[in-house]
Amino acid sequence: MPRENYQERLADLRTGVVGMGDLVLERYDAALEAAETGDDDLAREVIEGDHEVNERYLGLEEECTELLALQQPVAGDLRLVTASFKVITDLERVADLATNLAGYGGDDGGLHPAVDFRGIGEEAGGMVADAVAAYESGDPDACRAVAARDDDLDERCRRASEAVVRDLLEADRARVEAAGGDRDVEADADELAAALDEVSRALLAVRDLERVGDHAVNIAARALYMIENDDELIY
Image (cartoon, rainbow, N blue to C red):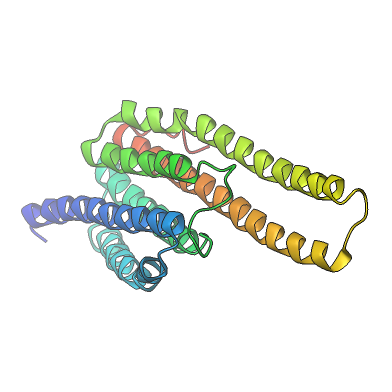
């Protein structure tokens, strides 16, 4: 392959990875909207549209494999190809998490009131967007900045999960007090089942948002390795 064509393919690979990032973030934003509003049609669109992300992933995976097998890149070119493969893997997993998130909203939309779902979701999504931008621009400081934000996201998720469980316990205590200590077992069972369903969806959503942040850090780590041959964020 002529050198010009080889370099063009490397540039196209990078552009393709960024394009996949844009598509995944579009799906992710739609998933947050679907969960918050209870829009079943939008949730279905996110879930059914996941195949487009998968097809994009497979095409870029094939390109990475061909570049490695046929061109045997070295040094910076090799890091670009291997980092790109890792980045698209994390992006594909963010898209999978988006399909989960789209279905977490209740019938009327929203999650547990103790969870700032939109705020946490936008922070996690912003980390992914910034990590992809750092990969595109080759900005090592931006890579490190994304990783530095992960502790704050984890803390927000931890506090949200604790608030959900605390609210469940307090609501149960209030029901007992309101009944004067006498409990209607059948009514309690129905109320508890509804409360547990809401709590379960909220905790799963928080877990998945935290994982989105983890994938953002992975993308930043691979981008930093690609840029500076520095694996400090990988391990």
